[in-house]
Image 1: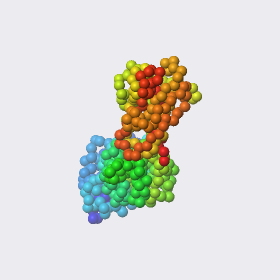
Image 2: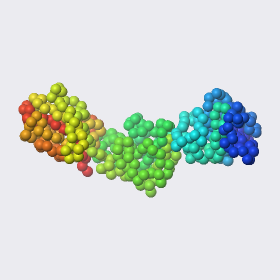
Image 3: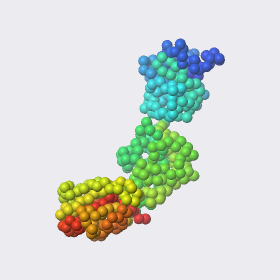
Image 4: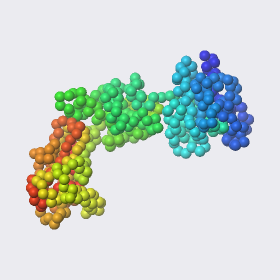
Length: 455
């Protein structure tokens, strides 16, 4: 045990020891001069010149990094001082893998000189983790001695060890502090979609903040969203959909290291505004790529959770018949604002109830009011109005009804309402022309369609 203590201690305190061997009047900048004898030594040799070099060599050999530091490749070693190591030695001395991971967590490829570091950089280390580096600190651990140069790199002495932490997704998967209900929903059921459609919390090169809810808070949000997640006859699927609606807005690609840094409102990747009650933070867990906050409450208003669905009319999925020759994508100027907008016009197509289909995904069960912007600017020299309608599930659904498109109105217009009783993973919406073959009566015209959920 004593030998292991000396081994670990001397490997990481050699940088601090180097300072003690230098004349007191010599400034640290002198070590960076090209005339410094240390420039002729590789990192391993510089370690070995400290008292008891065999001990530090033994640690490097045991961890597998002696040859690495003696190679021609360039590294930066972040060396915790002796006081920083003493509390953790017992956890490392009998665990070769932990020792290897720990040593690798303090070695970065390339030479990162403090004096040339600008801003905050996220740098990789040899165990695949990343650290946040500034000119004065790494992961907020301040350098006690900086830029001690060797032939193939540089040493920074630090006042605390850099723990080998789980990444944020690893925390959610394996840490006992992860609340069980959110783990089941987010990790076990929604792992793939969450990583691809929200954030890949395994990505060590980025920083994330994840909010997780204690079981009671999770269940409360789940129950609130189940009516809008209804999958008929399948309670498990209903719960899974509701769980997705809760979980997808609880992670952001940003690092809020303390409650004081968290804004009052975060905005999720899907654009949902989530208010953060900081008094509801139960615990804070640091990960290798961010921070996790365990919350006793995190209530998102339904109006924030379910945003308006905006459909750009020119981006249709299909048409009921090939009428490309009669289809016009127009760039128009709003007479009130001066802004440019784009709409679609299908004119003189010769078909009764010609329609454009729009395929929507993941539409909650709810009542919706429909609005559109449709500029009838005397198209084709017409001085009369015409009608068109929104079709729900089919092009000729009874509701909403046909609506008249007035002349020269640049404002949004109400186009009806409908109710979905079930959550729709996929959903067809139609823009349908009048039941007429007459050109003056059956144009299709639209800038956008807006579905506003009603609560």
